[in-house]
Length: 326
Image (cartoon, rainbow, N blue to C red):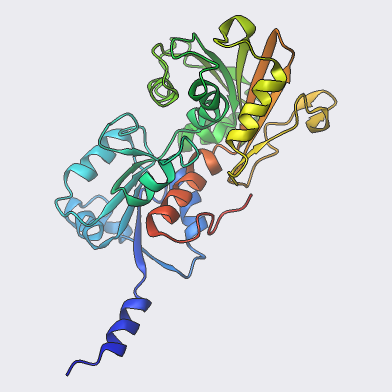
């Protein structure tokens, strides 16, 4: 007769095996930092000498329960395409699969049922940092019909230079103070725009103007709203209340008081105040004629690595914020 107790004990001791493909990159390092101290998972790594050996990498992927892809878009697509087994699950931190209907969008706070969809999915696309801020502000208004699906939206944002990855970090830090804040993607074709439009439910791409700031990490995503854009007559108090109600039970989205002067430093809003957290601070400033919705987050936290860990926790059905701070 087979003894069941030892078998059950062995099963209980089995830990999920996680592989970060692209661990040496900016996001990969951040994810590794958050996972390396965990005792409930096993991080598996490839021999650095075999990193570019496709057979060796595929062997590691096939051993993993979840692979977190921190790769350029084409490499991320190839990694998934080359995986023939059906048990390995993926979280893709690149933009490769964000608007792919076969992938589940990894923003648990997006709408009812999204958290459950992430938990049961095999393929998760990690949200971009800018879309996370944009969606956190406008999605409740569009879902409630206060903003129409045909609304013409504008977004301005400033992010720390770490958002550009290793090359921009090295370039910025080599030039130091000689590199002030700089707008970019002026051809209005930023790769995050399709993601913003799709998950907000907009029929027209928003006009998006991002800026790289004179700081390492942190970001502000600002969305102006004029009263003429509102489908339903609504005061700024009602808009703020609607957003507050939407996120009342969401631990990672913190809706600040209306026209919150206490958060301003001599009248300025600090883009770095959410750094080191998995939190999005949402602000509503202005008056009934003109409103400014602002999201503040760590572009390497809730905007990248923190979101990936949150999604991983949901997939593994452990505490959602395990290894994260608010």
